[in-house]
Amino acid sequence: MDAQYITPFIQSIQNVFTTMLQVPVTINAPTIKTDRTASYDVSGIIGMSGDVVGSVVLSFPKVTAQKLVASFCGMDLPADSPDFADAIGELVNMVSGCAKGMFVDKDVSISCPSVVIGADHSINVRSDTPCISIPCSTDHGDLAIEIAIKESASAENANPKSQAA
Amino acid sequence: MRILLVDDSKTMRSIQKSVLAQIGHTEIEEACDGQDALSKVGAFQPELMLVDWNMPNMDGITFVKHIRQTDKTTPIIMVTTESEKTRVIEAIKAGVNNYVVKPFTPDALSQRINETLNKKAA
Image 1 (cartoon, rainbow over the protein chains, first blue to last red):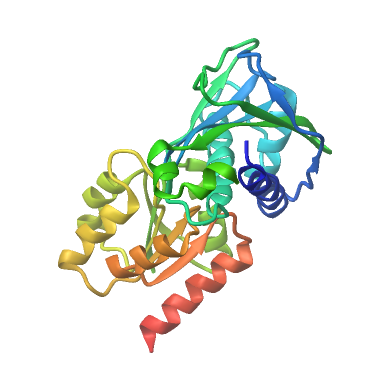
Image 2 (tube, chains in turn cyan, red):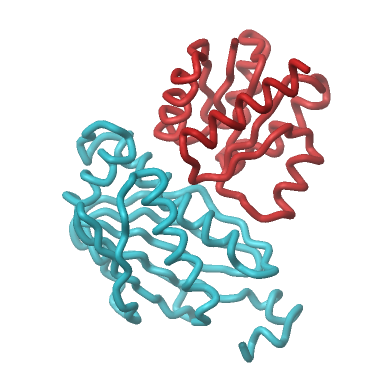
């Protein structure tokens, strides 16, 4: 995957967490993820369509997610409450929306977020799209941002140079 | 002042409500998408609307276009993750008066709200 699609997510997660949660994020070395099982218990998922297609997942251990949500909302929320899922959804929405704004000359739409909670759940991504996992560390614990996106066929045809980039 | 908050995220509505309370606005109605907002506008008669873009059922830009067919004056601030220049232009063309990109600091949001209300009052 082209670095032009990874760097925006790194900048975005740092921007969102610092601005909305006052929680700094340390970025660790990205890896290619081949396992469909989610990295952690709580996943916030956003789909991308348009010139770039695929999905973005913010994956948290439940304890970390609860601490981050408490920082975001200003109160503790149980992981089984609808408000907890809403907060996780809004975090992945902001991270994805902020990142796509940094894609150069790409018209991309994002879906409304989905949130899955539970140990060892699976997330299916497009089989033709590699998934890059970026481990992140915060004072509230570790999390990962998993990016499985690629330029759509129409975007590649419109800009053949981008295939070689 | 009556303010309508339109956002599908309850978390985001709560954060915006808290910022509005800090600058003295407590008469607030909430809507979870454009359709819900359309159903509440008539009875609530908002004097300011804060509207998200990406929402289920009816998105914010469609809601703004609906409203502007009959109401050209009530100030609308778009509060959204959509930061691309093309999106901002689309929103302004649809009739949005001001634009706040998420993530935002409380200061940035309150500044845009005050700026919008001052422009309306001028």
